[in-house]
Amino acid sequence: MIDLEIYYIVNLFVDIKTGGNFMQTKTVRVSYATWKTLQEMAAKYDNSMQAILDKAIEEYRRKSFLKEANKAFAALQNDSEAWKNELEERAAWDTVLFDGLKEE
View 1 (cartoon, one colour):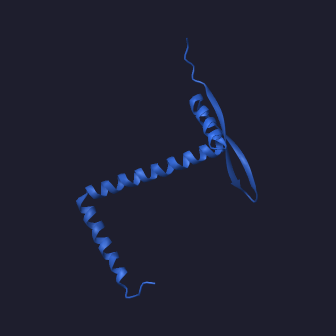
View 2 (cartoon, one colour):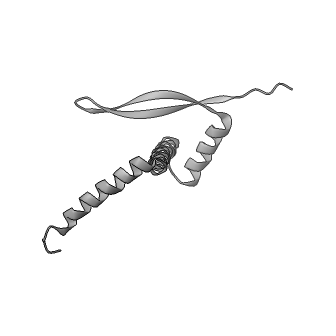
View 3 (cartoon, one colour):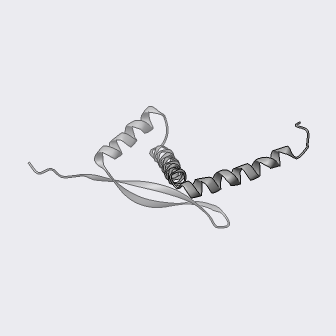
Protein backbone atom coordinates (compact mmCIF):
# COMPACT_ATOMS: atom_id res chain seq x y z
CA MET A 1 0.00 0.00 0.00
CA ILE A 2 1.38 3.40 -0.96
CA ASP A 3 1.30 6.04 1.75
CA LEU A 4 0.15 9.24 0.10
CA GLU A 5 0.13 12.48 2.00
CA ILE A 6 -3.04 14.32 1.13
CA TYR A 7 -3.15 18.10 1.27
CA TYR A 8 -6.19 20.28 1.55
CA ILE A 9 -6.33 23.88 0.53
CA VAL A 10 -7.21 26.42 3.18
CA ASN A 11 -8.16 29.89 2.03
CA LEU A 12 -6.87 32.66 4.25
CA PHE A 13 -8.60 36.01 4.03
CA VAL A 14 -6.36 39.03 4.29
CA ASP A 15 -8.05 42.33 5.07
CA ILE A 16 -6.43 44.84 2.76
CA LYS A 17 -7.48 48.45 3.16
CA THR A 18 -7.01 50.57 0.07
CA GLY A 19 -9.67 53.22 0.32
CA GLY A 20 -12.27 50.60 1.17
CA ASN A 21 -12.44 47.22 2.83
CA PHE A 22 -12.28 44.07 0.77
CA MET A 23 -11.07 40.55 1.36
CA GLN A 24 -8.41 38.90 -0.73
CA THR A 25 -7.89 35.15 -0.50
CA LYS A 26 -4.56 33.41 -0.28
CA THR A 27 -4.12 29.67 -0.55
CA VAL A 28 -2.14 27.55 1.89
CA ARG A 29 -1.63 23.80 1.68
CA VAL A 30 -2.12 21.87 4.89
CA SER A 31 -2.01 18.17 5.61
CA TYR A 32 -5.23 16.21 5.86
CA ALA A 33 -4.70 15.84 9.61
CA THR A 34 -4.39 19.61 10.04
CA TRP A 35 -7.43 20.27 7.88
CA LYS A 36 -9.46 17.70 9.82
CA THR A 37 -8.38 19.22 13.15
CA LEU A 38 -9.35 22.69 11.92
CA GLN A 39 -12.71 21.38 10.80
CA GLU A 40 -13.36 19.68 14.15
CA MET A 41 -12.29 22.71 16.17
CA ALA A 42 -14.43 25.04 14.07
CA ALA A 43 -17.46 22.86 14.72
CA LYS A 44 -16.68 22.40 18.42
CA TYR A 45 -16.09 26.09 19.14
CA ASP A 46 -18.71 27.37 16.68
CA ASN A 47 -16.11 29.38 14.82
CA SER A 48 -14.78 29.47 11.28
CA MET A 49 -11.69 27.53 10.26
CA GLN A 50 -10.18 30.87 9.28
CA ALA A 51 -10.75 32.32 12.77
CA ILE A 52 -9.26 29.23 14.45
CA LEU A 53 -6.21 29.41 12.18
CA ASP A 54 -5.84 33.18 12.70
CA LYS A 55 -5.86 32.72 16.49
CA ALA A 56 -3.39 29.84 16.35
CA ILE A 57 -0.95 31.78 14.17
CA GLU A 58 -1.18 34.87 16.39
CA GLU A 59 -0.53 32.77 19.50
CA TYR A 60 2.45 31.11 17.81
CA ARG A 61 3.80 34.53 16.76
CA ARG A 62 3.54 35.83 20.33
CA LYS A 63 5.14 32.74 21.87
CA SER A 64 7.98 32.91 19.34
CA PHE A 65 8.56 36.57 20.12
CA LEU A 66 8.73 35.91 23.87
CA LYS A 67 11.00 32.92 23.37
CA GLU A 68 13.43 35.06 21.35
CA ALA A 69 13.24 37.88 23.92
CA ASN A 70 13.97 35.46 26.77
CA LYS A 71 16.92 34.04 24.84
CA ALA A 72 18.34 37.53 24.27
CA PHE A 73 17.83 38.43 27.94
CA ALA A 74 19.63 35.26 29.03
CA ALA A 75 22.52 36.11 26.70
CA LEU A 76 22.67 39.59 28.24
CA GLN A 77 22.81 38.12 31.75
CA ASN A 78 25.59 35.72 30.70
CA ASP A 79 27.76 38.62 29.47
CA SER A 80 29.06 40.03 32.77
CA GLU A 81 30.15 43.40 31.34
CA ALA A 82 26.89 43.94 29.44
CA TRP A 83 24.85 42.85 32.47
CA LYS A 84 26.77 45.27 34.70
CA ASN A 85 26.02 48.10 32.25
CA GLU A 86 22.35 47.10 32.18
CA LEU A 87 22.09 47.22 35.97
CA GLU A 88 23.83 50.60 36.08
CA GLU A 89 21.41 51.99 33.51
CA ARG A 90 18.44 50.66 35.48
CA ALA A 91 19.77 52.29 38.64
CA ALA A 92 20.12 55.60 36.79
CA TRP A 93 16.51 55.39 35.62
CA ASP A 94 15.31 54.49 39.12
CA THR A 95 16.11 58.03 40.27
CA VAL A 96 13.28 59.27 38.06
CA LEU A 97 10.87 57.82 40.62
CA PHE A 98 12.16 60.27 43.22
CA ASP A 99 11.03 63.40 41.38
CA GLY A 100 9.27 64.86 44.42
CA LEU A 101 5.79 64.51 42.97
CA LYS A 102 3.08 63.05 45.16
CA GLU A 103 1.39 59.89 44.02
CA GLU A 104 -2.19 60.28 42.93
